[in-house]
Length: 278
Ligand SMILES: NC(=O)c1ccc[n+]([C@@H]2O[C@H](COP(=O)([O-])OP(=O)(O)OC[C@H]3O[C@@H](n4cnc5c(N)ncnc54)[C@H](OP(=O)(O)O)[C@@H]3O)[C@@H](O)[C@H]2O)c1
Figure 1 (cartoon, protein in one colour):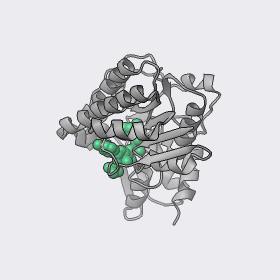
Figure 2 (cartoon, rainbow, N blue to C red; figure 1 turned 30 degrees about the vertical axis):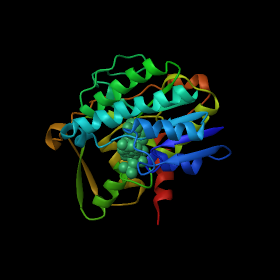
Figure 3 (cartoon, helix red, strand yellow; figure 1 turned 135 degrees about the horizontal axis):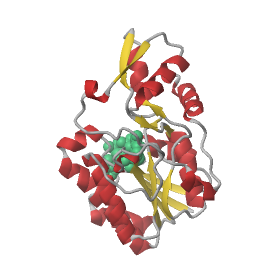
């Protein structure tokens, strides 16, 4: 297979580039092509003639999106449409990375793929609108929603926690938002398998299990053998510009037809800590 990865320098992109063997994979960063540039996107897709395009490029600063709305929509929605239109012309399949933040978080059981979108943040809206537009342009595309990603090669939650824990006796972490931590390596492996199996439609992919940010931080500190105390606080006590869903656990049901089962997030975290060691 010939594959193009947009966003190859990001957290997921780097894992995809490391994990994807046996196919012809071209990784593109924003320096190679900005997804907002429809002409360049089309040219690079025409030149590479890919079977698959994995669209992992995005403006992912959730709080930054609130004050840079134009950028959020132009990259996350319009950029995605540029890629889908180029893919359509070239006859390539697309796997688009979306987010649990397309949901409002009012459910108390895992979100299924056909639950209604109701994003509360600009980032979530930009992803939700991208999903709708992509399905119009390429009804057969694969839209993969993931969540709470961590991995080496960029900023992520456990890395931040470990850096803070190294210098502080105690940390306050939010305990009223629940989601699914997801290791970039495990997600990359699932994406490769989904492409090889010709996935279409909506799919939810996260590590198995769920946690609050507090539980995730406590397990990170404990697994790293640090003595820092992790204290639970409420979202209200840690005000951020973008609202986050209180509950955004994604159901694994949509992955079952592909025969893919994901490791638990605790197992993934242990492997991440080994990978992160200098
Ligand atoms: N991280 C999470 O917790 C999470 C959760 C749910 C869904 N997702 C989605 O999963 C995908 C991958 O996330 P990630 O954490 O790997 O993101 P990331 O580390 O922020 O990487 C994003 C990538 O997109 C590139 N990019 C940014 N603007 C671009 C533009 N205008 N044109 C072309 N490339 C551009 C970045 O290039 P530079 O590095 O050069 O800026 C980078 O390679 C994204 O679609 C994200 O929305 C992530």
